[in-house]
Image (cartoon, rainbow, N blue to C red):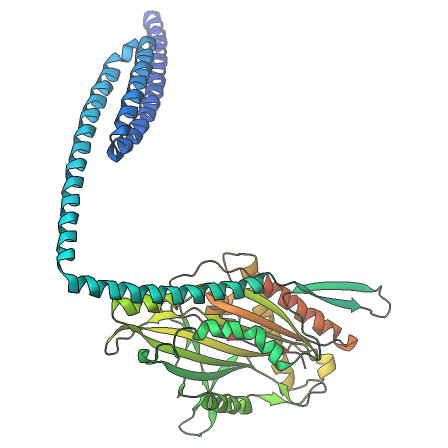
Length: 497
């Protein structure tokens, strides 16, 4: 390459770099101006909203507009080379100012037209005395209904306030083991029952949860065709058995079923049998029958040891009202609150229990005179207790039962731990028990946990394990209700034998 061309090449490369530097400087200036223009446009949008609201805002917009003009003049003095851009922006602002006034005038004209229409409608209403009296009567009826609902709502709020403001009671466990120092462990629960506590006292604390299930659905409006159905299953050796179904060949109760997840995300038991009940006595008759069919075997700790988890489901279905007035009354009686309560149970054999009441949910259905059905569900779950093999003396098939029970209870504790820690993944599928109870654990159900523990030092390990389970359940905080099929309501008991 000739020397001359090398010099010219270096010159043009240097010239190119200078031009690129100038271009970048210009681009920086343009970006800075674009930022200022964006700020100005945001302010103009704010002015537009204020102009549309009232005439008085127009004066403020004009003042701000003058301030913007001064700001633009200062900008033009510093950046004269971009005067054309600023001039175009001023033209747009003037056009916007004119259009804003036009929109304000249109709004005023529309407002006057609407006022005229309202005056005409009021005059027509006043001319029809019969229609007016009917409307007044309907308003009075709605006001009385609203007062009744408000009174019930206030009463419910007071009840909840009493529950929330109740003192936290404490369980003190003295860990006195040979060869180990004395350790005192303290556990806090909303309520602690002593050995002499009556059944009515325990039910008194459970009753508000059951009331939230039944509130407004049956006695206050029998025309909504309430229907109550019951199903009973047990989880035995990690298999699900329908205790109300009968094998067509062997004619024995306890047919094996499978839990599955529907397309809508709701967990259900395939081909689950259920029976309609019309009275409390019929319900208790089915419950007693299910308890008799439950798997039980004697151990060294308990002569009638439960070897399975029993789940009794009571489903309440009512028809939603078709007219607008009744719909308002229906919606007023369907609470959506989500609550969580842990309970420490009476002294005795260690057991864990949970009970919940789900908010009523719309379900598919279109009976005569109704647009849909509303369903609420109560689940009573008696959990088989965690078991120490060394104390129970389980061998053979009983040993397998113990392993299945302990694994399913550990899976339940893992689910509660994941919920309390707000993990992204909750391991519902690790056990058929947790898979079956997925809706009541992670849905919008109201949950009540009752623990029954032993004061004996002999059962210290099971007592500490049960209390730890209760604390983990108490830490679970539910979020807002999600659009899901009807949730389950759970009550369960867990007892180590």
